[in-house]
Length: 164
Image (cartoon, helix red, strand yellow):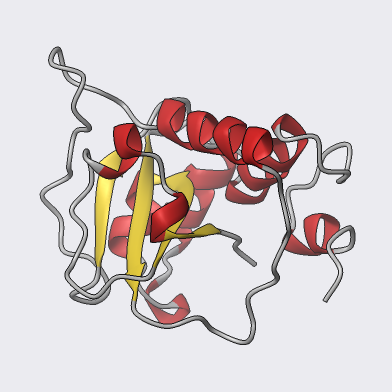
């Protein structure tokens, strides 16, 4: 249902990394863009309300970046090999997705994450049925020159183009 971009911490550029709360022992950092209210109020599918779902899908809503620190790689992740210039483009795309204050720092949201290893930050843009978290990931791949769907509001449209 939902895709994130996961990078080894050493591949996250300093301009991005220095604006994040990164826990000791972090080896991978995931970035997800999505509806702010959905992220904060729906840690599990059982917490989803009709009001939250309706607002996220049919009304332009505020967005958030969900950043998670991982100490290990998961077997369900799909690896995409990219060159240095593609990695630079990906880092810039992710960084531009965050809202920044007048000092250029990311705006951390004072909301509890799902675990002790994840955090929320204000993001740019608005979420809708036509601009979902998966559309955000799909665009990130396009920006780096990776072949992907023309448009994909669902994860399977993006994953179709990524070998297992």
